[in-house]
Length: 125
Image (tube, rainbow, N blue to C red; front, side, top):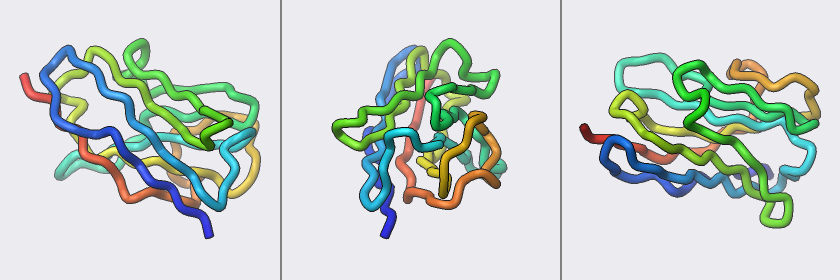
């Protein structure tokens, strides 16, 4: 059974940083296609960052240059390093994983079948 467990969320002031973690079990992060999504109250879920099976990455324009998606193979964990946080980044953040290998990073939730429960990020001005 695949489980994705997010952690690392919290409350920070604008300009601060957080690192989100997504620990996977029953699923191998190495050469996997995975992503981070977020959903703010009253808004649609939005793809934030994706990493395909070759390690290529993609980011939504609003976080480009501020967020970095990465994997720790030894820990079987996906990360999202978030710097220069803004109040607009406030949302519930979700980790997602594809069923099989993909060779194009994606921000579309249609590409992912496994989802974590989410971790809240709140950025105050």
